[in-house]
Amino acid sequence: MSEKPWLQLYPEEIPPELNYDNKPLQDYLKRTAAEFPNKKAIHFLGKEFTFQYIYDAARRLAGYLQEIGIEKGDRVAIMLPNCPQAVISFYGILMAGGIVVETNPLYTERELQYQLKDSGTKLIITLDILYPRVTKVKASTNLQHIVVTAIKEFLPFPKNIIYPFLQKKQYGLVVNVKHENNNHLLKEILKRSKNAYTENSEHHEEDVALLQYTGGTTGFPKGVMLTHKNLVANSSMCSAWLYKCKRGEEIILGIIPFFHVYGITTLMILAVLEAYKMILLPKFDPETTLKTIHKQRPTLFPGAPTIYIGLLNHPDLKKYDLSSIDSCLSGSAPLPVEVQQQFEKETGGKLVEGYGLTEASPITHANFLWGKRKKGSIGVPWPDTDVKIISLENGESLLPGEIGEILIKGPQIMKGYWNKLEETENIIQDGWLVTGDLGYMDKEGYFYVVDRKKDMIIAGGFNVYPREVEEVLYEHPDIQEAVVAGVPDPYRGETVKAYIVLKKNSFVNEQELDEFSRKYLAAYKVPRIYEFRDELPKSTVGKILRRVLIDEERNKIQDNEQV
Figure 1: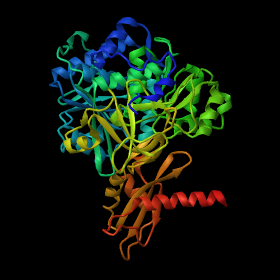
Figure 2: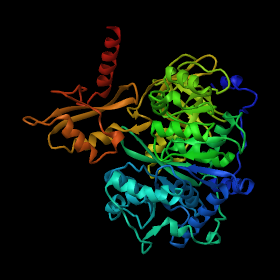
Figure 3: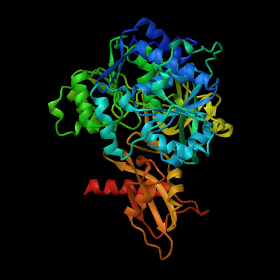
Figure 4: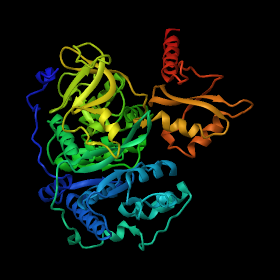
């Protein structure tokens, strides 16, 4: 497949190869702020911020981080929802020379502790309501500093007055942190002089910019090392794919979370690269999203199938004008054809499916927004991206139509896994990323994914790793055996199901297991379905056969459809 047959499908506006500047990511914010200083960069719940403001705030934060000891290569975590502070923090950390560690605000103490320890994070930037959770794990990590911010600090009047009362009602706590010792307040930091920041003169495109945690069925999540070059390349590819979009004119709806690399690349970095205005929402709520689209008129809407489904199923959908939406790139999970067609009907825009992995920054394929696309296909590889399908038996390249494992090569492929050389060598072979996904290419050059070799579950766009959930279930005193698998779900794409064998004379129900799991797992990882069995299918050496259980579920669905 070295001849890249898909390039014949490219419209003339998309070049097969791109030129990338050897610049760090933060330089693009500096460039955009210089070119569009007074242009609105962010709209957040009624308040707007210019590119110049974001740039100056990032510089102030960078200078402060340097003063308290953050040096080149230090890991600094961001545990925030989508908000202006998340953007300021991302670029401020990079300016200071640090490596960003994106952390999910939904993480439990157990999950947070693991990620902070594994990454060796020195400082974390988080919300006031998350501060107690961070302090509980601090002693068992390398964490030295905590920078605290609050949603209210970036809200317009009178929302900034009302929000603390709503927060107290929702979360049942009020957190007061003083700007002293190893606790720092972002609002105090941003009052400082913007001249305090010292720019790092040494930069190499292979410097790591982001540690994005992902994993698999063989263990706990791994830190994917994404370089400045990786992220610049993938965002530039995205810009080339959106060739009808105009620099400095588009408005992009920011629902995809920044703690997901899809949100980092196709939302934050792309917006800064092309001077787009971001409309940030801290969480997905269908009604709030519909109102925001109606009022703010976004033109770009990167999302996931569950988001589009949630909007289409809202009872008041017809009340809102969604006609501003022109282009949508769906990722994180397979996009049902009926959802694509219905969403395009409601908006008049284009919605296409893409494909990628965290290890690829993340996008490698997409259907054409303004060209030919095929039902059920993930589209064609992006510029500078090579793909081959190899035989699982002998590793040789296969012909069109033959199913094998998908391997990918390109400038967006990760540097490797953080402190995991063996795992890196297993997944990157001769420069090719071994995806673990099974698929094929048709004669024209369109690709299709037919199954995942890995057992990872994608529930509502979130990655769930069975081993991690199983580890928690095995801690329950009444459980003898447990295995977790992804089963089809009409809304989430897949949902988490746990198959349980109880110890003799033990009794426990679904509700008790649910309450137990929620103590140690983020909500999206908690099993939604429990099935109690006398035994689980096993191989001759005693390994539980997860695939047998998944096949049983598929057979059940097929039998029900035939009735």
